[in-house]
Amino acid sequence: MDLLNWNWRGWCLLVVTGSLILPMTAQTGEITSDPEALVIFDATLEKLQSRTVAMKKWQYYQTLTTRQFDANGKMEAQGTWRSIYRQGDSNPVELIGESRQGKLSFFHRKKQEKPASSPENSDPSKKNPDETSSGDRIETLGDLVKKYGLRDRMLWKHLPEEIAAGEPASVIQFSPMPGLKSKSREDRLLTVLSGKLWVSKIDSSVIKAEGRLESPWSLFWVIARMTTLEFRYEAEASPANRLLRRGEGAAETVVVFPFNTVRQKHSLSIEKFERRTPRKKQAE
Image (cartoon, rainbow, N blue to C red; front, top):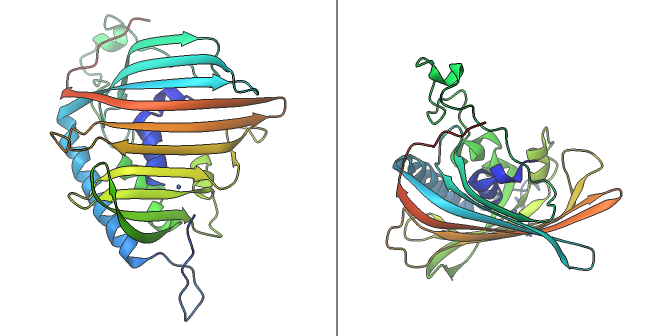
């Protein structure tokens, strides 16, 4: 599992998926979502899709820091990565700074791009790796919401309005729909994740989120289980530009193996926006 390349794909999949009192219809006993919560969800998804289009002109700087702890709670390793993120690109993350102390589990570098002078990259008929198409691009958050059927796979409940990130927000709570089958690792996550979203009443954007695992989640091997996942996110208050809004996220994870347990705390910050520039070529 390459956590370096989760970035907003990974974080936002968590944000849009995460205890709910289950409503039931009087006639059939069928478990259903709160219609008011679904109206808010649909408006949020529409806002997300329009933001994805608007962000094609922009890029932002982000910093991911991970700390790993032993069984006694003592930090044994730490890593910090600074990168530029270009939403919608086939390879959206450009690493621009990295530091590590100790050995961190799960984190590894992806194979680097071939230099511009290589035969493959010198062929003008080859597609620019920053250009996207429906066949090879990394999916946007809106794509992921539709792909995994989050609207119908989760149960949604409308809670009382609150203040979040300095503004009034609608609050919707979500939990897994009982009895749904899972076909992938991501599907299995949606069967054990619950949480809340705070949606701005000004523009229907997600300005705060939190979630947790209700039970262990099997990872890449049957013998590896994530027993703890707690996450939260909050956007900055009173932004100068609501499109280019910074934010802070944090998560705590515990992954259990037969002879080892990996405990990590992660933080992700969105720090600066600027007009999009081409990705720099990397040497092998």
